[in-house]
Image (tube, rainbow, N blue to C red; front, side):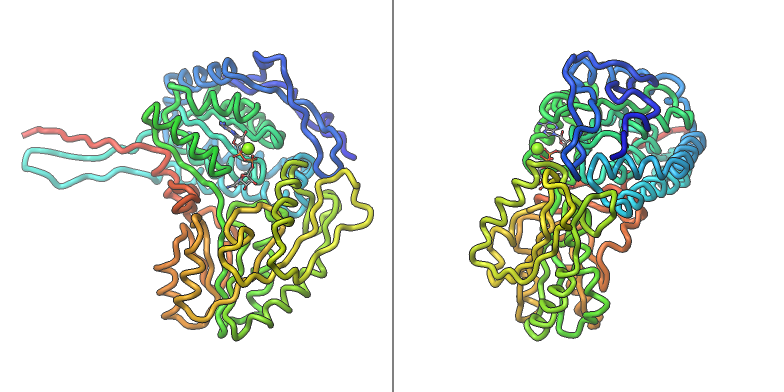
Length: 486
Ligand code: NAI
Ligand code: MG
């Protein structure tokens, strides 16, 4: 097993505040575990409200010094250098994420590449976001300015640390905000390495501060801090709702990305061979621990049995094992997450288990492995068809016609992503319009995760948009300037 501590070019027990590594005010620490074998990896700081306060103060100071004076062009350049450094460190980032999160190597590498791609995209966009001139009364010139909110707080989860850093911190820095990042307590290493790389890229001190720690300590302190002007959060609905109350107390905007129960709608005329890998992969990628996982497959009755059969064959070939052996599925993040998924499996009595994948025999018994499960489900109201499980479990639900499919698809409290598999162009357009989701895919799922494509939810999947140019509008505020010159 890799000794990760020896690979780290920084002390993992420290916080990154005001451009340097410093010990936490707290004497507590958190032990990171390798989900593949439950062995301890290293200790990280259990940051507290004093660390958060220091980080917010450093960010505030950065806005009034070098970072605040950076032009859009200079911000773009530093992000481009950071993207380059991420690319040069892709293997280290991959190794760390595989050990820390239990991501199979291929998925960890894809995340590192996505982080680089976000930085490249935002580097190029930095000097292309501009205001407008507005026709107004004679004697006036009116224009708008896009300006940073100020200090932005980023509370991120463990399932895609690198991608979420790219889309949230990347976009916030592009617009000139100064960031305080609180990574998840069970997945911190790539966030810490990102801080080190940002420093090497020449990001001025205080522009990015990283304070690891527990959600209800460091996270709560960041969410409540009166010096923060924007909060972005990705994670569970309950914590998201709490973050929003904190944002409300300080009257600051908040972006919430809270997961979903995203459906794929497969019609009788769909190209099933084309669809099959998307139907399965969207459910089992990252062991199902994906906000936009497709956990519901809705299939028209004419091809229902056929889709079940095709998916069952694919499931029977799915292997689960240690992340560094790069099977299709690795372990879940933690014993708690495994227990959560098992509690859903216990509720499966009214469903038909159609197929299961296999945990490889040499997978350590202490690892947090769950074999993927495919269920046939006649009842769209069943708990497994309604609640976010966040594990490698999919339900396949039959429907009669388009109206029925739409009612089932829209019949959860979530609305993040949906996809439609049909050759009928009119149906594609109708469903794209009527599905409750922030993204709709036609004859694909996820569009390869394109960093260019605005992403976010409706309903309990949250609000606000990340990714693409849209994120840059969210991470900035608009000022209207009206000059009366006669
Ligand atoms: P969580 O929502 O508790 O954790 C996400 C982040 O929020 C972490 O950084 C955590 O430290 C922080 N946090 C927790 N409590 C906080 C508080 N009181 N104040 C401020 N920050 C706080 O999610 P958890 O417990 O790891 O996973 C539980 C379930 O949440 C999963 O099974 C899944 O259904 C959902 N989830 C969804 C994600 C998504 O991508 N949308 C990501 C992670 C979890
Ligand atoms: Mg939690």
